Structures are given as structure tokens and as C-alpha cells.
Image 1 (cartoon, one colour):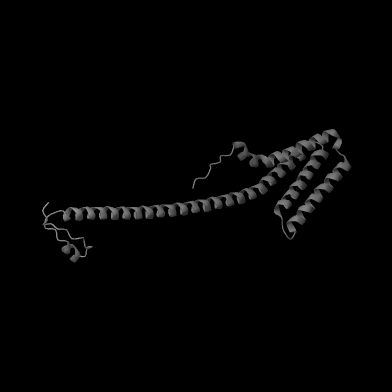
Image 2 (image 1 turned 90 degrees about the vertical axis):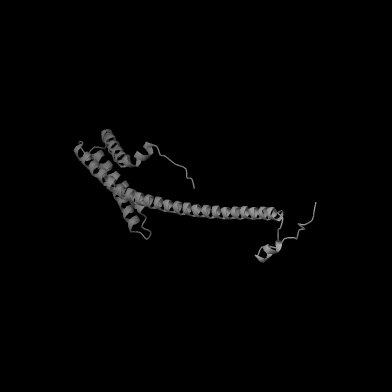
Amino acid sequence: MNEPLIQRHWVALAAPKVAPAIATSTVLILGRIWNANGAEHSTGNAALMVILAAGAATAGAFASAGRAGDSVIAGTAFATSGGLALAGVAGYADGLPLPLLLWAVATTAAYGIAARYWRTDRRDTVGYERQTTTRREEHSHVERVEALRAGAQIEVARSGAAYAEQLATALITRAALPGFNPQALTDSGLPELPATDTTKEH
């Protein structure tokens, strides 16, 4: 069984690895742009970001503690909450040290969460590859056994046909010789052949 080989581009392979850093860096940059456009020391903007971050965190807590326990929704909500908190600090704070510190913490946390999902995905991929390899080996073994069995049956049939042809040729040749006695063949267990008059002169 032949399966198509799919080779992914290096960009597609590297994108998941750099996505957390790109996300947190984008939030930091947008927060500093917001800071330069009047958000610095704005109590109303800071309060809005605090409310939004708290709301996202609450939604994540409800999603993770719910009956279904949807980890995707919970992870998205918590990531949104962290992003809003980082954006609020980056927009409100005076200077870069605190926003950069929070950016480093947020990036580290994002990679820690992503690493868990990467391990799970890798484990599922390895399990699927093992199952596929096992099924492929089983199918190949069955095909080899069936091919050997069919080959053996063909060889047996070919040998039997060759033996029958040789026997028929030998009987015809022997019957043409003088002194041939078909009764001797019958006595030995071979099929009785029609009698021929070996004394008749041509």
C-alpha cells in the first residue's frame, strides 16, 4: 500500500514555534503605540483594560470549571486576559522596564502552555504513526503469505500437468512397442487401455 509523501514547508514547521513570541510582542508594540497616543497615566483606559482582563480571566475560569471542561476555550480566555493585562500595562506605564518585564513573563508562560499542547500533539502523532506502521506490516505479511500460497498452488498444478503429460507420452510410446501387455498396466492399478493387435501385419 503506497501512501503519498507530504513534505511541509519550513515556514509551516516554524510558525507554531514562534507564534507565542509574535503574539506577546505584537501586544507589547500596540500597547506602546497606544501609550504614545495619550494612554499614559489615563485612569479611564487603565480601568477599562483591568475590567476586560478580569472578564476574560473569569470566562476562562468558568470554561475550565464547567461541565464540559473545554480546555481550548479556557486557554483562549486566559491568553486573552494576559494579553489585555500586558496591553494595559504597556499603555499606562511610564517607561519600558515594567512592560518589558511583563512581556518576558507573558512570553515564558505562553511557551510553557504551548509546550504542553506540543507534547500531547507529538504523542498522538507518534501513536498514529505506530498504528499505521503496524497495520502496514500486517497487510504486507498477509500479502506475502497469500502470494507464497498462490505460487505453491500454481507450482503444484504445473507439476501435476507435466507429470500427466509425461505419463501419457510414455504410455503412448510404450503401447507402440511390440509385446505391449495392457493387462499388466491394469493389474498394477493404472487405467485399462484399449487392447491393440500387436500381431497384425501392416
